[in-house]
Length: 243
Image (cartoon, rainbow, N blue to C red; front, top):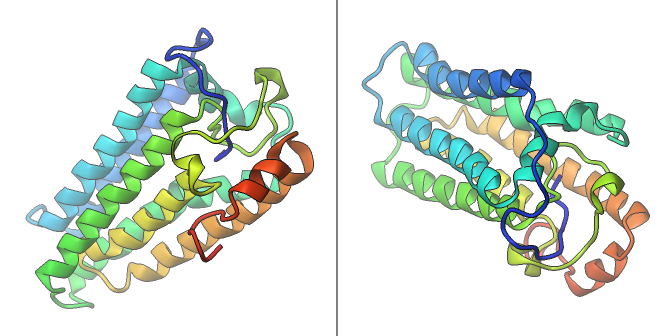
């Protein structure tokens, strides 16, 4: 949940125990992110695939390590948020799409494109641009996550954790920087993989993120005290000057 938090000292509240099932699910997701592109491509000599895998694993594992270091209670919240009270029904549908199915299908299509040569050879400079934008999007999303100890995996008002609103970190400029970084990564991944065809699932995933942003923003306006004033000060949700 791309919401906002008061500045707190690193470490904050003590962390609750993270269920072992959540750890196993996380490791399975990382394994799939590594395996799917190369299984679909049917080859290992694919620099775009390796660049994507290395960068994505570093971003996923690194962001969780930073959370454990600076906001350990958030790690427990994210691990158990699916069962938490107050989760919006529509988010139970959207989260698997933006967090699992969308990225994995994008990788699969990119790998199949490499196998069968649907796109042909993309200019090397365009793939490098994809690499740069993927790195930038991942870094921006990680910054948002580390800045915000209420960055839950599910949309809910976290009254049990003292949910509150304040501008901090990248939230000074836009209201949902985590989603902005994710959208950039979704659109950059097909370029890095060298596949125009992968832009279809990547673009659809980005559109679902935009929908989730709109629904979450409406939830926060209606249910989170202080968010309306914050929204007046920080006008844009994802892209300054646009929306």
